[in-house]
Image 1 (cartoon, rainbow, N blue to C red):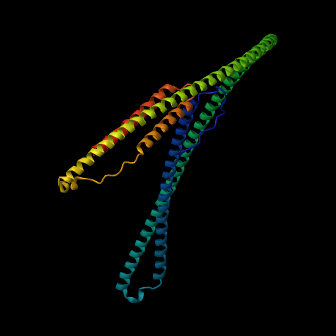
Image 2: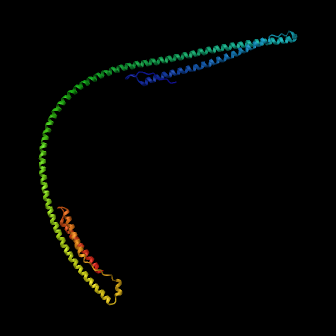
Image 3: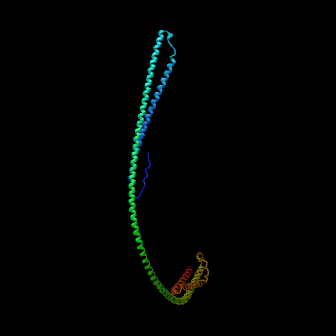
Amino acid sequence: MTQQNAAFRTVMRGYEPNEVDRAIADLQRALEQARAESGSSSVAVTKLTSQVSHLEEQANGYRTRIAALEQEQKESSAPTYTDLGARIGKILKLAEDEANDLRTKARAEAEKLVAEAEAAAEQARTAADRYAADVTSRADAESTRVLEAAKRQSDEILDYADREATARREEAEAVYEHQRARAAAAAADFEKTLAERRDKAAEEFSSLMQANEQAIAMAQERQAAIEAEADRTLAEAKAQAEAHLKSAREEAAQHVDSARLSAEKIRRESERELQAATARRDSITAQLTNVRQMLATLGGAAIVNPLAEPEEPVAPVAPVEAESEADDEADAAAEAAVDAGPEADVEGDTGDAELEVEQEAAEAEGMVEQETLA
């Protein structure tokens, strides 16, 4: 059986919760034990009450049997046996006397049993009542003792807690007053120090503002001088850049003219070489034609025809193509020199153009020789 713990007022540093909880737990266990004993006594009283009820039922049964026997006796006592003869009447008389005797004994026995049952029931009831009263009294006394002990202990704990709380509260109030006084003094010192620092900071700020204003004025003057110097330097740089650009353009134009003259010279030399190669090719072609005619005259046409190929006149386009290619190469070299700006190496580009023209002339000469050999 569970029971809620008694609620104690909790105060600051009032009592040790674990000790109070253990004391309350011990009191509750004692109370539970007393209640368990009271329950056992109630069970015993219930058993005795059941036995008394059983004995009363037996007594009632005996009373019922006695009443039935008395009723039978009344019903059988009417006839007489005087008219049946002396001997039969005597026998019946003896039987009737014996029956009356048995009936009397049975009634006496029944009354005795009823009396004994009633006495036993009364005794059992009295014992049960006495035992129940004793157990109940002891349980009540134990419960009262436990409750009084718990109440007394809880009162002691509460009194101790109140005393401790009062002492701690007074101590806390004293500490609080002391701390408040110290805080007030510290606040006054802080206000004084803060005012001094505020005045000092205002003076320092005023000095810094004056110094900053002077520095700003000097910086502005310096900035104006620097801007004027920068404008002058920029104008000089622009003039120098324009002069360098003009000089570079003039130098580039000279390089271009020189490259064109070199290309023209290379073109003329290439044309001479191509004309010489063409003349050599024509001479070789004429010689081959003479050889074929001679072979045809000698009757070797059947042998020459399978190997011969129809001659096609060589168009005098090669010199023109070579000349056009040389001009294109020279113009491309000149344009590259102009596009590269004044810093490009025009002489190197002209040398490359001359090399390319020479390569083209060599290729043309090789083609002429191949055609001549073919």
